[in-house]
Length: 457
Ligand SMILES: [Zn+2]
Image (cartoon, rainbow, N blue to C red; front, side, top):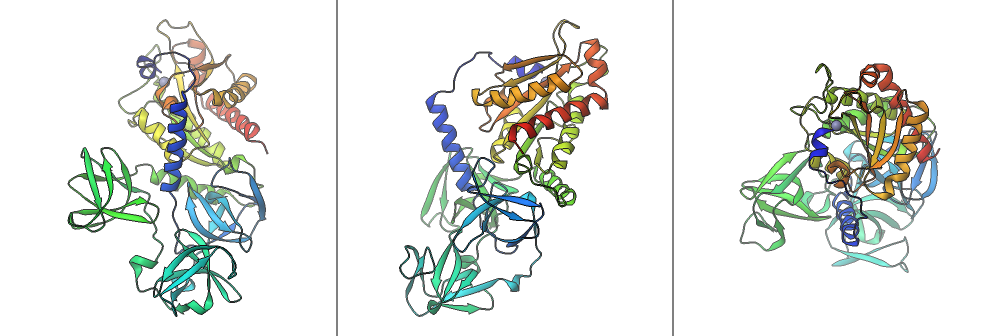
């Protein structure tokens, strides 16, 4: 835990109102930023016996209704690894993407229509001419059709569903104006970050076109493709523009592969299992240290904290995936990952919980023994205490309870976050335990039990 302690002032205070508002704003920006509509794979099959459909894309939203195994749902958009689905005629809800399976469908099973018979046609909230107008669409525009009800087509419009009267829409074999009418599939594995102090984002790939956004240093945008010396990026939902590649750089998210592997494993393992709230949770597991940073080292210099943390993280990952949860690892090998980056992984994935695993040491060997659970925000005290309780009752070592900890991975986390010290590297009794598979599996099980308890059944 050495490196985290060194730059941490241990002082307890409540986050200011400003911080609170900034966090809310971050949530908001991150939320709208990851809103997309899917064009090709738009039907999913429910794999759990019963699956919750929630009001919003996350475990924290209320349950609207439930659907059953083998039910088919139509996907309208995706946010935060949750799918927005159509459940009733005009009812929309959200399901965890890792608890459903996408059906293979061929592009020609998607129906498209072209706007006809009027220069501008109204799009309505419901399948009725009395219903509220939620937008208008010009003649010849093309739309993806998701449903038909009598004289009305339900179509995708700006990432939402809307209704258009069938008099004004003709079915077409395939869209011709790909740019304008196809809902884009955004590649979330790639993003562009601004390297310059300030940079303009233009409507067209030329600085002679109009500016649609003033970007500043460090801002990030989803990357779509390159055109000459220009990156085409998502500025806001349904708003795209060009930024010169001499002012920005394109990156690939290193963690995308790990996320995919864990979801693939989830799908394989998740067969006819009863749904629990834990299965809807996205948990980020952060194995402390790694690469050039070994963390604490045993007195005989034979055992490194970074190795024990990673081994224990794998055991916790397996246990939580087996319970159906969506697990994201900040690292799966012995490599350097920045503390800020670890918190960002939690923030970007809207984690329901970030768990950082560490092993302690003190300057004087054999002074302290046992486990300690740290929290930074008061709101996370509950989950910290639940985990601490299970470590105390199921763990092999003494438990030292919960403590406030001003660690960067907790401090920069906008999501619920805790850090667990799972025993002392330089206590001879602790070391005997913590280096064993048995100990690591026991604490993984204790944390799993705590989460099952905390999220309820
Ligand atoms: Zn550590």
